[in-house]
Image (cartoon, rainbow, N blue to C red):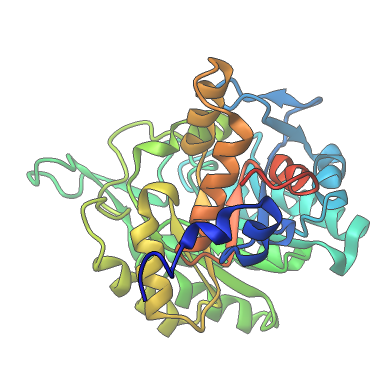
Length: 341
C-alpha cells in the first residue's frame, strides 16, 4: 500500500495522537541521579563547569536527593570526594569514608524505597588520579605510556575491598568503573565471601577513553596527575570490542551492564542491548553532555528542555533501560508537564 491510501502524517496530526502512538516513553523511574558528596564541604559547592550542579556535604546528602525522590526518581549513584588521598587510594575502603557515611544516611532516611548505587573506583582517592595502583618504572621504552603502568591484578583486589565496605554500609548496587580486567569477578568473590550475595553489580562494562569527562573530573578532583587513561579505558574507534568487554563481565557475574558515555555511543548501546537483551542495560549521559547543553542554552542557541528530552529519549530508544543523567531532576519535573514532542 502506498500514497494516497497510506498517509503517515495522519498519526502526527494531533499531539494527543502522537503521544498515543509514541514508540518510546520516558518516566522518572528510568533515571539514576549522580550525586557528588565531598567530605570536607560544609555547604553545597557549585561545580563551575557544570552549571546548576553541586558537591554536597555528607550531612546534606538526604536533602540533596529529596527533590529527585519527590519527583519519582528512585535511584542514585554516589561519588565521593575524600578529605585524604594517597598513592593506594586507601580512603576509598575506609568504613567511615565519605561514600560509606552517605550510604548509611540515605538508607536510614529512605530504606528500601530508594535504590543506592555506589561508584567503585580509585581515581578520586589516589594522589595521582589514576584508577588503580600505579607502578613507576614499568613499561619503560614502550613510548606512549612512559615509565609507569596501572597494576591490574593488585588493583582489582582493592576494588573488592571497596565494594565490601560499600555493601557493609548498605549499598544496594556497587558499580565498578575502572575498566580493569577481571574486576567484576574479583568484586563478586569479595562480596560473596563476606555474605553480600544479594548486592548487585552494575558494571561499567563498556567505558570509553572519552573527552566528554572533563567537567566530572573538575567536580570530583579526579584528573590524572600524569599521562591519561587510554591504556585501560576503551578506544572510541571500537564498537565490536564492546561485545568482548560485556561478555567478560556477564561471565564474571555482572547483574547490570553499562555503556559510557551515552550520546556519542548510541550505536554501541544498541549493539550491546541486541547482544544481551535479557540483561538490564544502563547508559551514562556524562558530564560533558550535560555541560554542552547547559552552555548552549545559556547562550540562547538551544531550547534546553526540548534538547534534553530529545537526548534522553534517544538514549532509551537506542536500548538503555537505565539512564544515568545529571538532568534527572529537571527531566522528571518536565515529564509532569506537557510532552515537548
